[in-house]
Image (tube, rainbow, N blue to C red; front, side, top):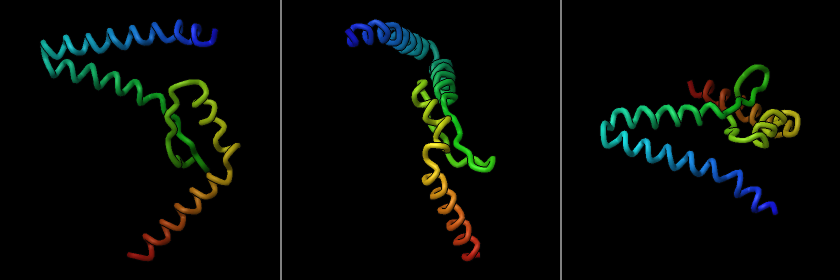
Length: 103
């Protein structure tokens, strides 16, 4: 039953992906420049699916969040992974100190 439901929900995505791929291919026959612009706009839209993990209002890194589960994990990262955040912060301080010592 789950496989059928998953298939039903994945079909529109597959159709849209195929249509977009075909559209970009047709555009490339007309003009590669236009085709690249469409590709770039799609890639930029995908890149907007990222969220920043911050510590003290400073961005540590970005997490790709293409779905609600990844988005939830990104939102709760700092509360569920405080040791990891502390480790990243400590490594950054060590790196800053080493760079300062080299100059």
